[in-house]
Image (cartoon, rainbow, N blue to C red; front, side, top):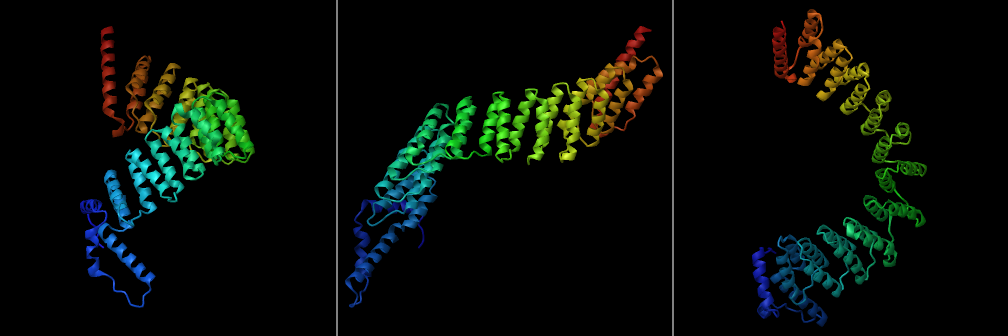
Length: 472
């Protein structure tokens, strides 16, 4: 049967609503009355008449399935509700549960909460069996609308429908409540009384609350919840441990975090990379560098291969504490363990070596970095050039410039201004020219922005020449 467009349905349904007895609709029934066989039983005749009447009714307003489809596709929730109400007033018409479900969600998501609740009450009064997923979705609707109190009321309302809340209902409400600081305590109260409502908190329930209280700096409550898990036969997972490890690290209680990691390993869990990253960073910040390196070495043995973030964290930790040579050892460990250094690895290490005056070592890693195709920040060449200049190694400083130019890198103008005055102060004019020519004869690629270099050099040399002329 052809489905009428929305405006035709609306007009037709209003006509039906004004003639609830449908006298005109069934006036023509006599002309199309079913012809009964004389031998048919009375019950058979009655059944056929009922079927015929039902078909006539459906031909005017559509079958329940078609009404459901029409309501489901409506973008206007109020129009969908009007179609629902008009169809409901027809004799012998009963909406299927799916229609209620669709309309309830449509009204809720559009913010028509009173209409949504009214329709939900109708489900109860009409004794429809309700799926648990409907309450999960209603709870989420209130959560998305920023109404944690209404989400909590919906959880309690499940009991009025002769249903027991499920762990997914509890967890969804808890997740909504803890996102609002004022509802942390109500969330904890609900968690503690959940067994009275026939639902037991699971691992996810504990994790939701532990994370919330850690972020709220109530670490003692979070740790207490963690200890309660084993007493209530709830098994913690990797997420449970990670939440607490992060919480202890955030509060600089790194020793407790390490103890948790040991407990985790002893119970057969394999910590994830994020847990290791958090702990390594905390150990380095607390200057427990030996423990950080030991943990880095143990990771692979415990089933978690260190990645670039883990190695760079420890390299930075050693460099910050003036132990760049130890950082070199970390970088040398990387390739055998299947992790190649990146630009951050090299720049951190070169910076640390330069800060300690270990320029020859820094230059070695600079060459390695450039050979791998990395384009370092201009500050790297500046640090090396300035460092070599400060200790009187001008040839080495020029060698750094040569290498950077050869690899298409553009030294900053400050780098040139650092080295040129030092070169010009050399007594032998020939030596100055030789060194300068060695720097400038490098084949410079377009990407090195030769215009900037040339402009800077010309400006400097002109000033220098004028100064010498005045002094003569």
